[in-house]
Image (tube, rainbow, N blue to C red):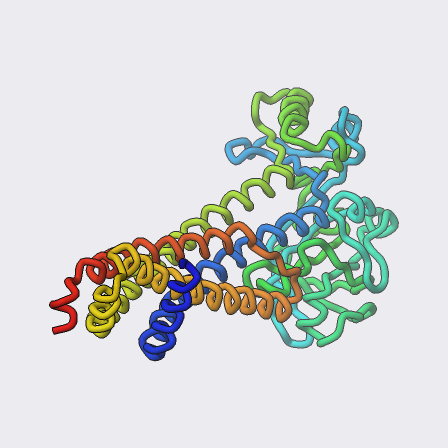
Amino acid sequence: MTGSKAISALRSIKRGKSRSLLTLCSVAVGVFAVVVISGIGSVGTQEINSTMLTMGINSAMVEAAGTSGGISLTDDDVTAFGELNGVNKAMPLMGAMSKAKILGKFLNCYAWGVDQDAKDIISIEAVHGRLIDDHDVENHASVCVIDEVLAEESYGRSNIVGKKISFLLGGSYREFLIVGIAKSGITGLQSVMSGIIPDFVYLPYSTMQDIVGKTSFDKIALLLEKDAADEGLAQTLTAEVNSLKDSADGLVINNFQSQKGQLTDILSIITTVLSLIAGISLVVSGITVMTAMLVSVGERTREIGIKKSIGAGNMDIMTEFLLESVLLTAFGSLVGIASGLGACLAGCLILGVEFVLPVGSVISAFGFSVIMGALFGVYPALKAARLRPIEALR
């Protein structure tokens, strides 16, 4: 019996092709928006996780708190911090926003002063040439390692080892020899978010100290033991480094694990809010379904009268119209899901990132739209069921 009603509902949808198509499209647009937003959120979370892992999730930075400008970090601190429980290595770190001048182009970049341990602590690897070594640090050499993105932006190719580049440091441009091209965990994000995330360059920290006139360091980078790299260790180390510097809370430790959590939480909130906004369009599409079904009731008044006169009950008529409403939203949802996933997949292929299927969001969007179709189809179905056969045939 239910199968015959479903077939009858499908025939009614087919008869009103134009109206059914417009209603289906309104549902599809709403579901498409929800799926695309959820897909962006899922891909973004995946990229944050993979980026943090490749950057070195077990790394942390020790630096002076904002209100403790009087605390300086020295070579003795590097040695002492490197010997703490849970720490494998410690590396002095300098950092400054800069501009790179190469081939007449001026590009924003961030200069890092590092030593030979940068490969392990901040997870960079040489694609061409080499990284900064202990010889460069000891000799305060005017050499640098730049990331692939900066090389591509300047020369249009990645291997530009042996070329010269100038950086704005200490108030003037200084020339450096490029000895290596590096790739880090954030290189992919730099390509996607060009103009937002600056290009990175790496210099011997001793050279940066000479340029800015410092004998201390801006930060000390720590390589934590993988099995212990969590919030508990970060809190313990914060207390220990402050104790070594005879300070209550002058130093803070920022680790990638906490930053990863903060980034994913922010992205999750943004995705949820945008999905809720997109969900409003599903409610609007439900109203469209109700309007279309009311028009359908008006057009099929005589048909309803004939069915009732030959024995169809109110429940039969109501069920048929509800099925038609639900089928419309179900077909529209499937179209919206297919197009939304297709758009997400195409975007991932263009940007070169891994596609992540937002299974939960797809199921939720489909279920919510079908429920909306059923709810907004109740009134037209009731109206059709309450028609009297004699009045309907008149």
